[in-house]
Amino acid sequence: MTATTNGKVIATATRTNNAWQTTTWPTPLDRNAAITALSLAERLITHGEDDPCVIEWRRELPRG
Image (cartoon, rainbow, N blue to C red; front, side, top):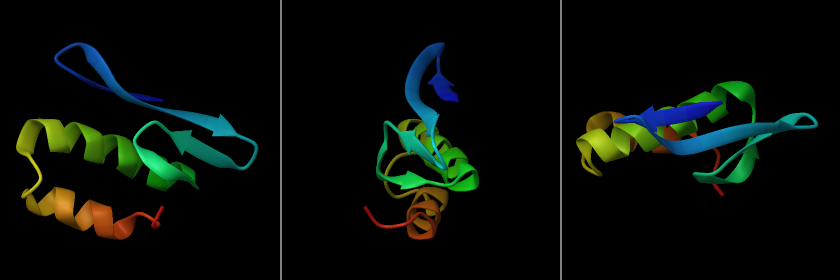
């Protein structure tokens, strides 16, 4: 899976065994969390650190 902004790839997620590794999160994730991590990367670029979605999505992801 990839996340793109303005036609450029900003993050990727790759399935390895039973987990997903993303380029934007330090720990392996399940599929839903990998999608959240990719969405988070895109949202950070377009809305910044103080965006309510960014803050909440970070809370939802497992700690790395």
